Amino acid sequence: MTSSDRGLQSTTSDADGNKALDLIASFVILDNLHMSVDIQKGANDKPQRAPIWWSNAIFFVSMHIVAVLGVYYYPVWVAPRKTIALCILSWQLASFGITIGYHRLWSHKSFTARRPLRAVLAVMGALGFQGSIKWWCLRHRLHHRFTDDPIHDPYAATRGLWYAHVGWIFRKPVYERMSLVNKDDLEADPVVQIQHRFYIPIAAFFGLVTPTLIAKLWGDALGGYLYGGVVARIMIWHCTFMINSLAHWDGLQPYTNEVTARGNLHAFPHDFRNGPCPQDWDPSKWIIWALHQFTPLVTRVRRAREEDVSRARRWMSYVHSLGKDHLPHGWEALSDEDFFDAVAEVENENEATDQPQKEEYEAWDLSRLESHVLNERRTVVLIDGWVVDVTKYMSEHPGGAALLGQYSFKSRPGTPLLADVKKDLPQDASWAFNGGMNNHTRTARARMRSMRIARLIQ
Image (tube, rainbow, N blue to C red; front, side, top):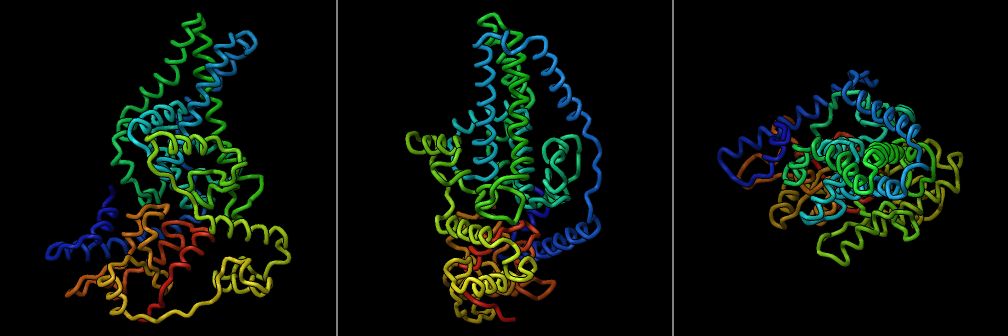
């Protein structure tokens, strides 16, 4: 955990006395964090060329050379059927280890699994030869935080198809905003920690040695190493990397066009279903669903709200039907409020847009806000002058409840610490919501608007 993390988390303390100093320090650290990120952003408008990651590059290229030469001298049609079946099995185990384990369980926390299943998924994920759970998830979370950002997205599609597919593997950049990504849950999981510590021997044994030993049972140890080991690793690499490249390059966008990604993944990352419709090709969701329905191994699954999915589909259908030439003039530069008003005017109805009927909101001062937080025991965040009650949303937040807690309004009876001591203003989450901590989608912004309860007056 970084010092910034500790500073931010200290704001959740309820103790008095010396703990009050921690709260003051946390505001200072938070403000300095905002400032440092803004400075870095201004100083680096273009991605810097990172040094070559020689160990990665040599291993990656060597595996491809071994695979090509091996298949040339020992063709597929010569290998026993059992060996080819072993290759497919090894490839698919790695595939589900990445999609179910690394991606949906650990990166997005889209379902909750008991330790035995987590251990199995950790081994299956290691078969992917894509780094440890911790290494993989932190970069993937950064990718979702700053999708398509050529500086902060580790495999930004905006830097080209080649870079998004494999180019990023050959470089060893310093991710300036990695410290903003929450890793507490990963560090608290013993399965993640053990796999991270012993990742190389686990991956080598199960990814290369085990297929060799299995194929030796029918007298084809070489084929087991080549097809069950090396070739299967190449297959899982490029299947995974195509999600970063081809899946950001072409295809339908039924849920959002705010980023280059296709499908449901970036619109609703916390959903255990990559495809929410029953007919969507998504074997991983059916495996998770079956484990949840028929075994005690998956105790909870998370789904996007049906109204959010329907609204996203409706909006994208509207955009596709009109085309950009018929959207409100200058729509890309409009604020959220003006954008949805313009759409409603063009459409002449509110129900087909993301914006509900206009509501009247009370105007609150700090004392009213403090009373709401203390007396009604609510959790609120302040965004662009709005009081947003996130109490019921805490467990649903894709970034976790702890992140919302860090930016929630803090108040203590009998102390002046309800405000940012440097600016004499309440702690504000606008910077974090509007790109500082995450590039929120239109769906996320619409959800935030639905939780507004008042205007804050200074």
